[in-house]
Image 1 (cartoon, rainbow, N blue to C red):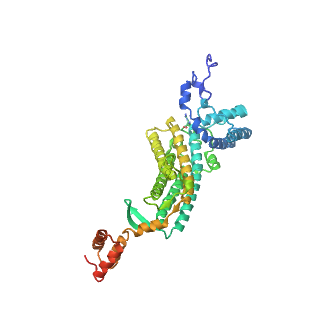
Image 2: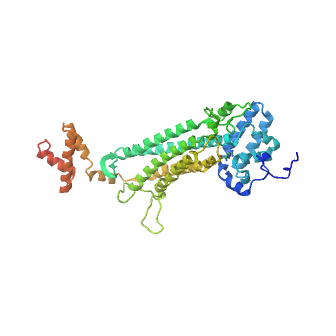
Length: 428
Ligand code: ARG
């Protein structure tokens, strides 16, 4: 049969069964290298391990594996030096690496993809990337936790109003208030640790979807890459992204917590509250109003929570209708994940020094406690301890509060006169 493909430049990776080159508009549309280049160090780590496994299994020679490793190391060096030229025509990070490898070491590069598909490769790369990202985030959460703990230690006796419905409710300490956030952050840490543990299984060897008839050693690859084991079901290995969604959901919960903490600080920094003064180095001014000092940092963190929640919903929506196994829709997960990681790191990175820089106004907080009737519940409980039924005690103190409001006195003065007037027995 005449080979009329000889002069046709079909695709270098799958050109065998194609009779036309890819339309340049398709090339431009489906390329992902402008964002997935970030996975390059993980892609190379996976490839080096894969090559060693191939050699161990006798599928390539030890010399070939060594040459492949040498070539891949060269590529990573160029990448780190910012000297690597990546080509959008080569679609994604995997094909760029393979092409560059061939330029460096020649034909042997063609053996690297033995027993592997980009489908198990990308699932591996994202897991390796997220594992590192989680370690960085855990580290940042540790710093935040330490700073919160130091503030908690410092403010054991700093009384302040506690709020419900944003109305003064009962006296608390600043330590108690910050302690609530510290507890939330501790749970966030646990969630990230658990998410990491659940994603820490190797998909490599799953191939496109059905594994391979080649004698691959999936466990070897998994243990070399410090995974807890392999993902047994090969379809699951290539087509599940629940680990990515779990990461986004864990990140969303964390951002919701950070956003609430920021909202508290924003309120406290208003002239109306004045519980806290922003440090000049951590606040911004207005281009128009010379009097302004704005809490941009907590506002931005509060604002950035939106994009993180959005990524979680984006991934859930992207995945919900996909038939098994891999579908190209899944390429859309990268930007969401990268942006989630970047947002979390930048927010955590700035929140810790920001909290450290705050100047709390303990006098103002104590004054706010004194000037209101927040000890009303304490009085109810004192009456309960004297044997008065709770509902009755509530009503009695309610009447004292009303009297205090009507006479413009503070609650303690009213309680004093009322108790004296009733000879220690409470009037109804
Ligand atoms: N760039 C692709 C992604 O991010 C890699 C996997 C491509 N697989 C394929 N069969 N086209 O998902």
